[in-house]
Image 1: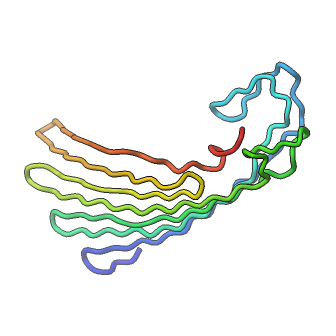
Image 2: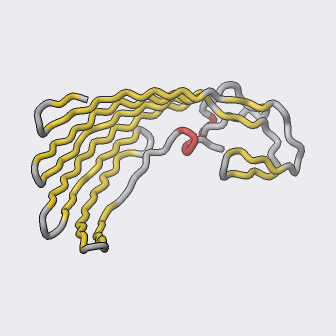
Image 3: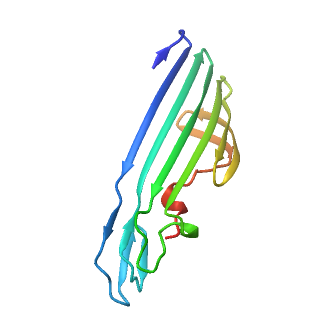
Amino acid sequence: EFKISDELTLTPSVYYRYNDGWINEEKFLQGDTVRVNDSTLVENYDLPLFTPFVVQKKYRLAGVYDKDELNISFGGNYTTDHADGGDKRDDGSTSFYDNHQTLDFNNLSLFTQILYQHEFANFTIGARYENHSEYGSSFVPRFAVTKIFDDTHVKLLISQSFRAPVVMNISGD
């Protein structure tokens, strides 16, 4: 964290994650139901359970400008994902779409949010721009007005969302 001035702080960060894949060579009998992950059950599963290894790198620079009633946060992220499916399955397929052995994606996001704290209410306006190498661009605006009346909190929120998919969201499994 770098304090540029009393009002401005910049925070760079680097994130690295490596998930090692695994293969369970045991074949399941026709008609078996197999839990592939926390939420997916596959019936009649007759291929080895398989997870690719994934390397994710994320570079981030975030800033905050905070003075009196005004708070501005801004920054950007650049993320790369690489996945390797390893050997092909017995039927010649891989776990990725279009029978790819590897997948490579990147995602660039830029964001800003302005919070103005007024005695009448707090006003927030913000935006996020995402550019995913596989799924294209997305612009995500946000607007909010909040007010506290004694023990009651009133909020008006208008927003959209986009979440960049991770490798296992994109694979063919």
